[in-house]
Amino acid sequence: MSQLFRKYKKGDKETCLEIFDSNCPKYFATSERKDFSEWLGGEQAKDYYLILDGETTVGCGGIFIDEKSKEVGLAWGMIRSDYHGLGYGSSLLKFRLDLLRTLPPEFMKVVRTSQHTVHFFEKHGFLQIKNVKDGWGPGLDKIEMILADH
Image (cartoon, rainbow, N blue to C red):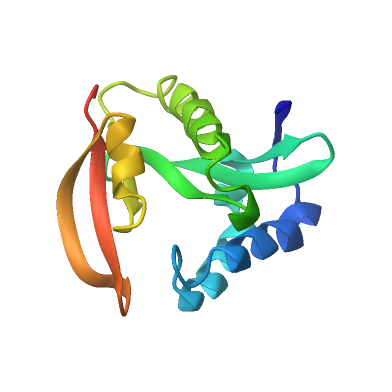
């Protein structure tokens, strides 16, 4: 696995949407596709990255900064479904956590995920603080977590 991270560019949008589609409906509600597409076209995508193995884009994910709520966190992280279980998700998470740790330490570090990935984030130091049944859509709970080393 020879990984490379690079900043997202507008021309990467379709590739990121294909990665999103490969993770539906288990990890993302199909109704979230529009939100993700709009997010990729906005200012917040300035802190979004692709993870590549050679010439193949295997995943994408970013961070967000919310000055108002004093939160920083993980945004729209995903690995192409045919690359799950190969360590790319852990690499992408470590890369993004390193970015978060450069931000103001008083900001709470958060992730909002589902029941299907909560244990992955727990293994990496996140603690569950809220669980909303069907919060992302039918059968997809919204789980809010904070990084324990905050």
